[in-house]
Structures are given as structure tokens and as C-alpha cells.
Image 1: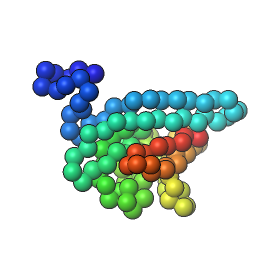
Image 2: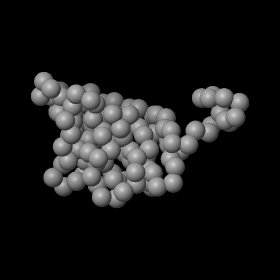
Image 3: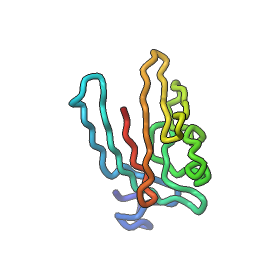
Image 4: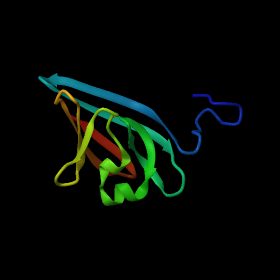
Length: 115
């Protein structure tokens, strides 16, 4: 990745993220499990999260409180609901299809499992 001659190839601009790996497993009927790893250069008070289904820097208090829908993780036409145990969220599309994302915090990385 090369933004300009002011950034070294491996550096990210402050407040930005990039997807490093994306793996999908569609071996089960009607279910896709995706695992995504992102690299972020977040500003003070921010942490890696998800906004509009893309990696983004979000306010760290959202992650601490586990109020995932506050980071606006779903696409514009989808509704967000917090899972009862606060382990993730669902995005419901207008046609009724539901995408469930569960979160595990590992070494300050968000590792998500989409179903």
C-alpha cells in the first residue's frame, strides 16, 4: 500500500484501517463463517471496530461497554440489534436475512465470526 511519499509503505494514516486477511467458509448449508483481520492506526481514545460493515476506528468506550450497535456496524438499510449477552450484534436486512457477528477481544484485536 502506498499513499504518498510522506508515508512509508507499511504505515497507515492516523484514524484509518485496512483489511489484512479475509477467510470465508461456506461448507455448511445456509451459513457462511467469515474471519477478518484488520490493521488500524487509531487515534487516542479509539480502538479497531466496525462501521458500515468495514473496519474502522471507533470510540474505545463502545468496546468497553460492549454496546456494539453504537459503532454503526450494519449497512444503511440494515437494522442493528445487540445480542442478549452482549457478545456481538445482528444486522437484519429488509428481506429478513440476518447476519450475526460475535466478537472476541484478543490482544486488542477484534476477531469476528459472521454467521
